Length: 79
Image 1 (cartoon, rainbow, N blue to C red):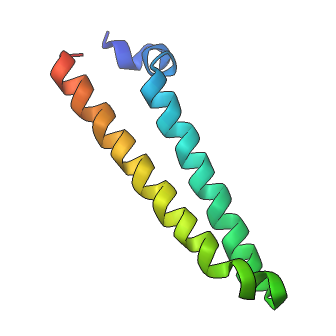
Image 2 (image 1 turned 90 degrees about the vertical axis):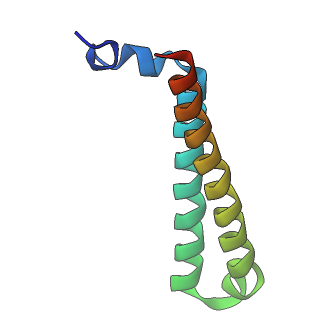
């Protein structure tokens, strides 16, 4: 049986995979706060709307780099 399919234990033990997963959750949280502020409008949206979306783009770029780095390292290590 392939090690990845054995209950996902190999992935759960890989620190870079865990960091990428947590980063993805952070991106979703920033996105939800930004969308919530936009939907509610008002002072929060005027002051922080663009900043929240910039943070989301930066966080998303970091997560994409982590995922690509994870895939590159897994390929190089032959696992």
